[in-house]
Image (tube, rainbow, N blue to C red):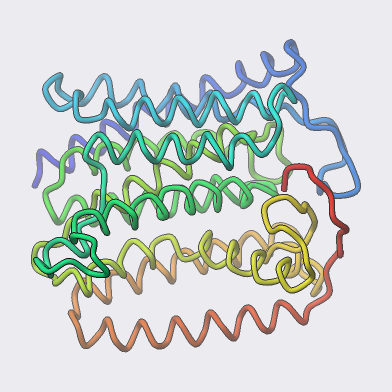
Length: 357
């Protein structure tokens, strides 16, 4: 356990220092190559903002993993590395306007999911509990299908979560912090090292991304964080818990992006809009600002919800099936009430457009 914790601390420290050092360089590079997000009616910033923050987070994470994970273990990271590279490159090209924005949703995200599944990154919800095919499909194939939906959904959720200074990065840091704690207790070296690295890289970048932001993640960075967060959720293992209970833990850790995406999807679908092709200030944080909070306060509320989700995940892990039932019902009711309440809150309505969210 002590060696595991030391490894996590070293990976965190290396990533934090690298990210803190690389972010100003990424900012300068973004201005030089023209990767700039201009102000607009659907934006919350009033000045041009560089969009290469994801590159700094990516390089810092890879550096920490390369230094503090042994060669034999690094091979297991290859699938994550390749998929993360796809997410970063496609998202950055989308930021630059080189690719049509639907390519990332219809091609890049599914492709990254297939890479991860093909390299043994998948859930184990159905396979351990049934040897009998369900709807004609073996349990393993159902796990592959569930994993595909999970990967694409979480990557997309982070992609649209990056709409306010420090929000996406801070939520990713909270997700990584709770993952580190679970991995440390469960003795999962690789999961802990990756989570610690992304935690350090996110916090190093957050120094420049918190309001008033001096650089944005860009869609490449947001997709990268979503991909890593989804992978961490898939790779966490809880041998002491039944699969019917353990699946709740990553869902609770990632409650904020899941809730925000659900709110946006329900809201836009009700108005006849395509959820991921209709940008607007109708996310949870936007609606909190419309209710009277400042941007910093709205982001702080989202952070608080992330912390609550992580603590509830620990409640399920320690309390077993009884706690899982109680938490599941409570979170389900709270989530529905939250969506109904925020749907009634004022927000900036948008028309049918085809740009990034």
